[in-house]
Length: 478
Ligand code: NAD
Image (tube, rainbow, N blue to C red; front, side, top):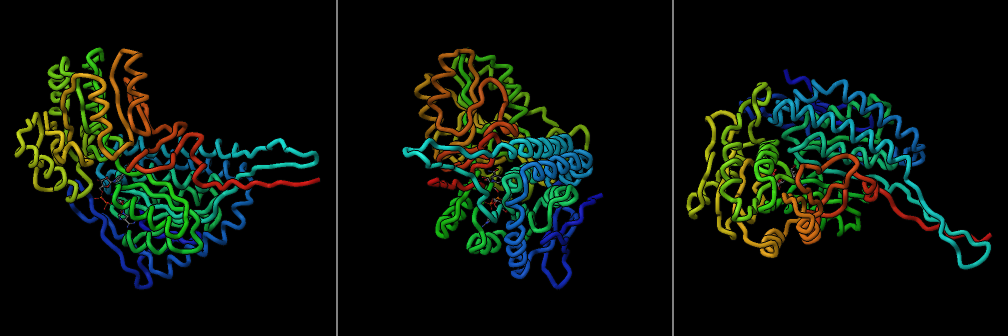
């Protein structure tokens, strides 16, 4: 049933566990059964990938944007054709419901289309000179060999953002995908290869994350590092990158505040936020997590939101009626249970959920916690799971202060009908993205990224290529 053959891709060659390579088992989080073996890259494999990426860069950087665009569009079409199979495999190793997995795969094709078009418009500029006969040009060139590390929560989406930005700007890439959920990344690499991407432009490796990242980042061949994942790992990789003077893009965690004002359409907010909360079992960096509800509408919101969450159908992602699948692994179940145990001990009210479901598979009931203390772990650490903290506020300055009080700054959500409040809070929120009265984040054409501990650099939008290009100034007399 799990139809993806898990392999390394180095210089256009697919490699399995042959040659004495080590590997690891990949599990289905819904039943904890082994799905397949994933081969690990040896040191020689990493050297071969670096060498291949360096050689491929020499010609790929000179390829025309039209050629790159055609390959990416073709890969997007192949991904659309293969979406059902890729999504089924992703549900098997990641756990999310098939509809969500399929949506993620289709979004990958859209992301490729966007980068294919936008990559044709990587322009330079001419700066008027102070003297006659002087011409001053600014050109933007691909930075070189990039290395990227992507996480297990959106295995396809997080990987394609880095693939499309690197390849579309004329760079080459070594990607280490998520070992726990590898199938979609392998499928994307196959689609890029089948679409005509030359050998060595995209290389795929697996292994022990810290060993691979420290080796690849330190290599003199590597010019740029891109990471999506947790804040602590991001800080480690960013400091390693800066030690070697490598450019980096860091898309890290968040703890998104949701501000619900008394003039909001409260029931609509409760419905939209419940759907958003359970998406991917809450294992989403922009997942709404800290709900600040104005005291006048607190009861109304809490009742509707908790009722929505309590009726979510949790089950195997391949079952058509499952609205939420298992968590990705036992670590996440323990982490969420830790937040719940803390809540039970500190006087918070568990409105619904609060326990593991069954004893096979990593299922956890989606949970709403009311009134956790401001300094509790739930209110201050990224939960990254199906748990929401709801608390109340009285005035706008106070809620802004509390929303901004954490080191995170990724996404924030606002519900209000007042244009004055919209202006005040969208200016005042310390976050890379603010979405007001709807869910509008993470489209190919809009920039995605955080500030503060949530990282730096945007993916998507017209900013998508910025991290992959260098600016060169050329001045010429006569
Ligand atoms: P973790 O910190 O162990 O790992 C996070 C990711 O980084 C994983 O994909 C892992 O393979 C990778 N990683 C870990 N150490 C690495 C290293 N030295 N070099 C390269 N890659 C490395 O956490 P976890 O238990 O797997 O995930 C839970 C946490 O991860 C959450 O709290 C959340 O903050 C974060 N996370 C964030 C995102 C995101 O989209 N920003 C995605 C997935 C996970």
